[in-house]
Image: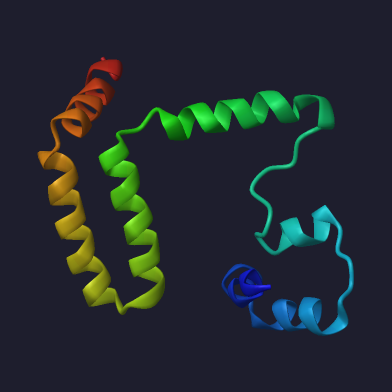
Length: 112
């Protein structure tokens, strides 16, 4: 039930209150209209889409992924100035990591 505390960030306060106070069931289309759904796929496409998403996430530097996860948490809990300062520090650490730098450079070579 702790996840319910995050609903207002995703659905807005009004819709989060409605969902929690009524206990109603909501369809994917309605939740999608509130930005709560990332992607809608046919059941027979689910495994391929999920695999593609997992590959995309797993293809990034572990250092960069850890930094980004920390930043998501920071951005949710501090003001803009502190968020920017934290971002600068995190990105500096990512760019200092040889593996991350190599992966970043591979993007440049992919663009031609």
